[in-house]
Image (tube, each protein chain N blue to C red):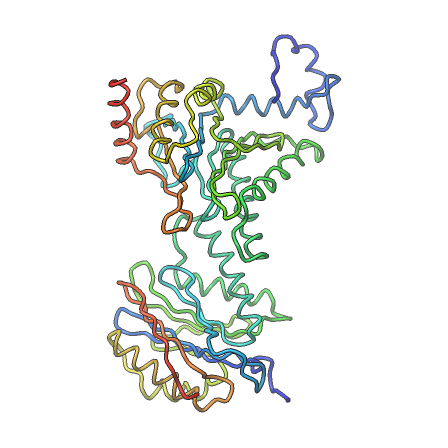
Length: 257
Length: 206
């Protein structure tokens, strides 16, 4: 966890922030920290584990009416049939890593003839990210990922990775803008025995309280679930109608509370 | 035992035919090592997308390897392009994969059969270095190819309904492999229509 008070280190940082491959005297890698700053200004994504699945939710901001809405998401990606990813940060950087993750998963399947365990995939991507903090002289990737997946070894899992190449497994976590407040709400509200439906409701609650936008609609939100369907992992991106219904169900509950 | 070509080491036969808004693809199910039959449930035809099948007759090891390589590429394509690979594109991809090994090839001679996104039938075959054959009627490959050509030319007619197509394909395949020592020991026939896939296992001469 790299916490720093920006004004205090303003003068010191100047000398040590231009290269990724050197430490500062305090033992920090400034480029990595700056990458994380970039992500904290990006649009939010949260991931929560349920008993029967994993839920990913993201805020989507359409910056111009002139933009053609593509069919593909820029926040949620499928890596393989059993692994999905939520993204926060520089989209162009994310594309490279998503592609790499997909190749990793397929190479594993080619070699071992079975789906790659989630943690192995996360490690693969993280090892790549780490390389950019130690050699090459190239800047780190300005992306954080939330990996949601299912494998036969550990069931449903949620992981978070950041530009440093560190990763951890989570029951619920948030990345991007307002992630600290989202994280603290999750800490209070998360319970171990919630199913996917309840977790979706929790995700709505968290986003409602942390998003900058005043209103939540299907236009500025994305939800996806990774569950087992007929015993096989299945990634489902909620349609606009499903999101609208989800929001309606949870507004009514809120007002009842 | 001497063999003329490494393509005859395991033996096998695959046949694909176009019908009215449907395709059928069939293979024998013998897995043998030269004269010795080892297994009688080794189909050389595999479903690789919702509406496309590929058959890889030839060296059994390469049958399995080409299938795995193809599945790798197809998965990446569908993740990248957010759509299924159409049979024509599968055929093109296979041609590329095979030609990459031009001077040390995979010993398979693939057959592709499927319905495109408008449910229009597509079949193709290629040699071991990727030279394609695009036909409107039937394609085939394997150690019983001469006999299969004879049977198909005789029995084929255009616009066969799925049930009739199944009968024609079955007769063509079974009669051909019965004259080939290295093919046979059962067969499997898949008929692909817009509504779905019907697969039937045939018991031939033992």
